[in-house]
Amino acid sequence: MARHYQFFTSQNLEDIRTKKRHVEMGVRNLPLHSSTFSWRNIALLLLLSISLEETTSSPVKIEIRKPGVCPKDRVICETKLLDFCLSDLHCQDYMKCCSFACGKKCMDPFQEPCMLPSDQGSCNIGISRWYFDFKHQICKPFKYGGCYGNANNFISRGNCRVACSSVVKTGQCPLFPFKNRMECPASCKGDMDCPKSDKCCESMCGFVCAKAWTVKSGFCPRKPLMCSKIERPKCLQDRDCPVSQKCCSHCGLKCLESQK
Image 1 (cartoon, rainbow, N blue to C red):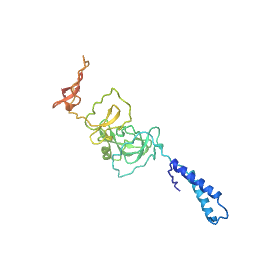
Image 2: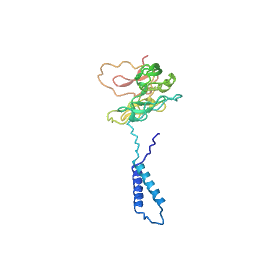
Image 3: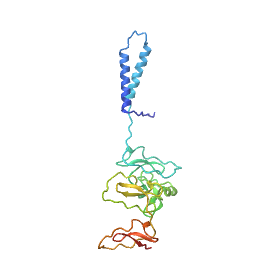
Image 4: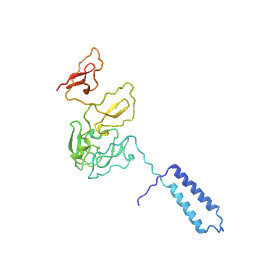
């Protein structure tokens, strides 16, 4: 028979214990020949006392959550996969139990799942699955063993594309001053954690979602090996430069003609 847990605060438990003591005192001090109370009343009070005793001694379920935030589930699942965990306690070390790609699995909350390598897991069933090749920015098939592995594991190529095709959004992260950089909790792990066209960028206080700078086509000329002096910046991003020029590092930031 399934066991049902009840959730109590410390104040709830103290209130229950107080009521229990009052009931016990009432039973002890009750006159045996009282016209107000019958033996049926005494029996009911005793049953209430026993019920309160069982309530106060029942286990209190406390859910422990590890630091970090699970990535958002990015696909609509038509097929539900087997869950490999139910809570963070089922996962080793710093891993968290997250709902991702149609099932619960242990994941690193500080790692973008689409950047992980393919992992066939620890069994040898040989199920056809898809993973995102981050280097080549394409979804590829692989054989999944059926047990464990990592979160870069999708039922179909369509699910893989939806989940990972926008992992790296277009545009350039803005330049933040790092002179007085502080270590702060990251509000994002990758571009997918940010709304619309915003990118996950390093800032003075950890990684944050920021408006992306426009990047023009082409490449900056090769940097000189040595600079006699570093000039004051003439630009910060490509949009600061006219037409086909880009903002390039060339003994200081300046607008230069892009190369194909």
